[in-house]
Amino acid sequence: MAPLLALLAMLAALALAQVGVAVANYFFPYYYCYDADRGWGLRPGARGWWRREGKAYVQINRDGLRDREHSKEKPPGTFRIAVLGDSYAQAIQVPVEQTFWAVMERRLRACPALKGREVEAINFGVDGYGTAQELITLRRDAWKYHPDAVVVEVFLGNDVRNNSVVLESNRCRPFFIVRDGKLEPVGPFVSSSSYRLWCLARFDYRGLSPLAMLRRAFEILIHPARKPTPDYPYEPALNYNVYKPPADQAWRAAWDVTDALIEEISAEAHAHHAMLLVTTLDMGIQAWPDPLVRQNFMHEMGLNDLFYADDRIAALGKRDGFAVLGLGKPLQAYAQTHRVYLHGFSNTPTGFGHWNEIGHRVAGELIADRLCDMVGQDAAAESGHDASLNQIQANGSRPRQP
Image 1: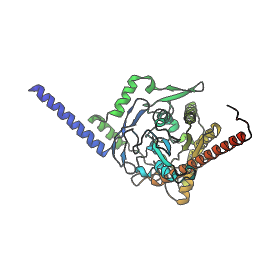
Image 2: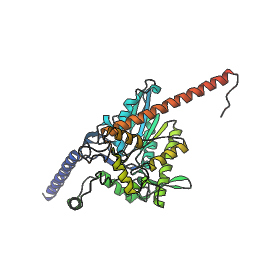
Image 3: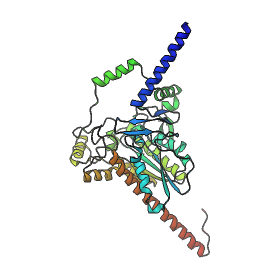
């Protein structure tokens, strides 16, 4: 009888645990899982309402993307775009149809240079990703879909820190350093099996002991987070060191590896004959509609402007020959002209956090217009090359072999 009672008790405990997980997933949906290459990813089939910032019903497709289903084989006559990024690309704060990559997809269908081709954007964005994880995603996953173009969003508010094994506190991710001009993998996630086991438990196990729950609740009650305001426009998840040149070796190394990772993505795109557009995103204060708030922030921070980091990535693209679209300045101009906030929702502080519907719309339109220009320039260059080749052949000479 005793063994039977013990078995029944164990089954009852398991059933209660399952009910608890189901209730937690309903009220506080969890979309993530452990990933052996990137630390974490999106759990295929996960779904649920996100209400903490904005409101949207979020569904993760069978390939672990916050997107509709896509075939690996590219349909004929289709211009495909792979979108790489972090929480701005995952965009769980807004419905799928309002995300910047959905806006971009619809707008590009009217691009004259695409001549009526179908446009398909595939979103590989995952919350918290740095450039290293985006590079791995491109190599491991995105190329399987045969994209014609790659859009990489760089959120300078934390991507530079995310790429640094010294500065980043969340080390359940791969890191690289630049050694002898090459990227070399480093960090506990790469070198330690026990650390990877801890990361596995962190992302694949949702439960907390009652004692841990009480401790966290006590900490929240005693030390509530200070919310950002126009008088105190500081967001704790962001690093404001990126507004000025790096002041110490850790930040210099973080910038060096960020540059090298973007350059590696550029080399990948070139090797796969895909266009590359690197987009640098804005932070809330950069697109604040009231210039006085921006000026006060700059004065307190001792800044000359808010776009050091954006201009640095633009210079990298100019030097290495890949396209960069800095979104900060045009988004600031739009917000100031129209007196609207591009960040924040009705259930969060206005002007802070992720893009709202307006922010996604304006950003998506800007990205689409730049891609349309790039397609047109590429087509014009190809046409010019063909015309030159025809002229050479008409003159009776053969083109020189490379």
